Image (cartoon, rainbow, N blue to C red; front, side):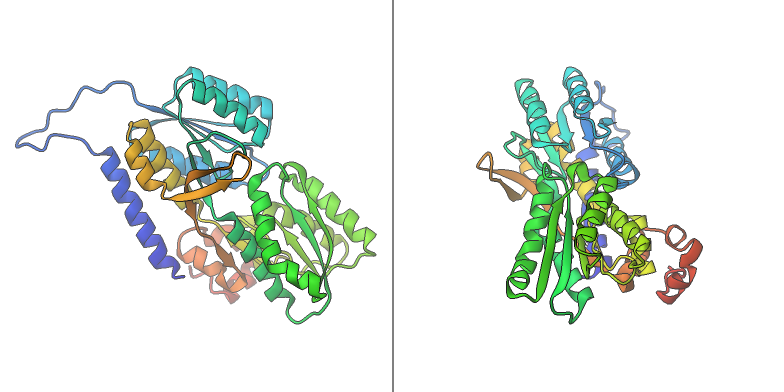
Length: 372
């Protein structure tokens, strides 16, 4: 996939759609007469936390805010801080404020469903953003093809292992309450199960980590590693945060850089770990594209253009609990190795200064990153 072409197409399409959604005026001759404006439509957005990934505050918030402001929509955006009670309180306030649409990243299916029921009673449409509320009632979903993300992680690990028969693998997975984590695992298994069955690889243990808690993930990994007499040849870590926790344990065991570790999100820390050689791969999910797609969808709904919203949500995601298909925008992802980190720099996704400080100047020079 050519990043430059893909990004130009996406950004051009996004700019055109946002312009069309926000354009107004008089097509007649002379100076246009500005219409009298009522209160701006309000879109409520609940982000999940600040700790499981830096993306929510560093990327999603500014991108969504910019898109809504450009379209003359008032964003009402709060962070649940990983707290179910706070998540519910924020949602109650947004519903009381009569937001035109509610966009949520649920902490759990139960918490998401409770909010969606209240929104439905108030006739407020809901968008599940990045995560699906299993058994929920959301009208739309915007996210990534999570099964494919898991497949990319497994493919990356297999390539990093090379020809090492019987390599011992530990899997550190995401929260069992997050359906995305389930889909990541499903994608990984589609590539790895046959190798486990044949003995080409050996699964030591697959361990889910509650709440995507990085500290807990590191503790669980260390426990599994110790129980396996300190032997591990590869680690499937579900995201860069968990990968960082795993790498911290490997450093204590003098194994960092010797054991391939996967990740996800292409965070600055994750990319630095890839450049350093401590992490073999990460998965880049274009958060910019996800935020723009969600903003376009929310803007259309807020303006009462449900037909336009349906035209944007051309995919379907199956909810196996509710036994229904959710109208969705599903985006692709890309595997990032050391030699492809530079691509993210040239595309403006990350800045050289963020990656190349401290001990990584030489690694950046080797990958021609300092020159952008």
